[in-house]
Length: 134
Image (tube, rainbow, N blue to C red):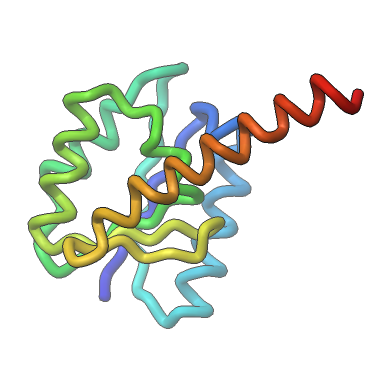
């Protein structure tokens, strides 16, 4: 499978992972999983911009894949970009999330909402723990 890595200078959850580090992790992931990688697509401009991602989602051919550092990358997308992302998955584009060790397909798209809910619970749990224990 040919896979296109997507790196971003935007926050990924609570962290800002440098683009060169994301690209190095992408390379290792592709080698370990015997995937053919294209040149990574990276956002160039600042916070909250998803121009390159929108372009990638519109142009990627069926049967290929997209590689993200984390599902957190897509949890904070603007509504129009999230809709385009969902349509892309239904077109047969597999989406790999390295940190979650998960491959999203049209057959398991509902799992993404579960991952998002679990993530929200864990963040809220940390807030409660900080409030009472720190």
